[in-house]
Image (cartoon, rainbow, N blue to C red; front, side, top):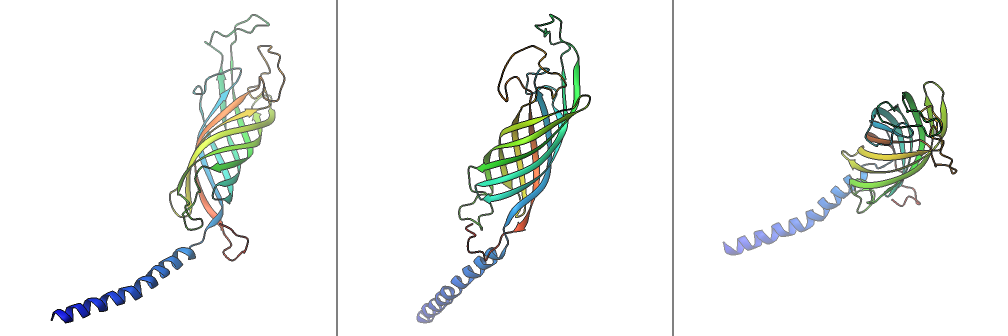
Amino acid sequence: NKAKIIRMKKTILRIIAVLLPALVCSVSVVAQDEPEYRMEIGAGGGLLGYVGDYNSSLTADLQPMGEVLARYRLNPRMALRLAVMSGKIKGDMDGTGTWYPESGTLATGGFDRTLTDIGLSYEYNFLPYGTGREYRGAKPFTPYITLGLGVTVASGGKSAAGMNLPLGVGVKYKIANRLNLGVEWAMHFSTSDELDGMKDPYGIKSSGAFKNTDCYHALKVSLTYDIAPKCKTCNKDDW
C-alpha cells in the first residue's frame, strides 16, 4: 500500500509538471492578446480661477469650467495632449481698499467674462504608465508634470486674446483596462493684460512676455477612454 501511494504521488507530480507550463503559457497568450492603445479621448470639469489686476488670490472667485481633450502616448512615460477648456473668470475691486496710483482714486467695480483656452501640452510621467502588459514594469498610477503652449481668448465686453504658457502637476490612475482618471492643477501664464478687460490700471511700466500680465489657473478632474489599438506586428514598435 505504501508503495502504491508513493507511485501515485509521483504520477501526480509528473502530471503537474507537464500541465503547469502549458497553463502558464496559455494565460500569457490570453494577456498578450488583449490590445493596448496609443490614444485617449475624454472630457473633464473643475474650477477656474483668475489672478490679475482685480485679484491676487488663488482661492478667490473660483468658477466652474469644462474641458474636452485628446492624448497621444509617445511611450509609457511621455504623452502629448490637445485640449479645449472654457469657463468663467470673475474679479471684484469693491471693498479691497485698493487705490490707483496715477489718479489717486479708490479702485471699484469688477468683471465677469468667458475664457476659452486651446492648448497643446507635453506630459512626463514619473512612473511608466499602463496596464503592465505593453511595457514591463508599467504602473496603473503615476504622478506627472506638464508644460505646454496655448491660445487664450476672453470674451464679454471688449474681447482680448493672447498666448499662454501652462505649467502644472497631476496624477493619472487606470481605473479599468481602457478607462483613465486624471486630476491636474495648472497655472497658465498669459501674454495679455486685458483678460479682465482692463490694461495696466496701476501704471506699472514693465517689459517681457509675461511681466505685469493676467494669469489664470485650473483644477480639474478628467475621464478618458483608450482608442487606437497599438500595432502588434510592427518591427519598430518598442513598447
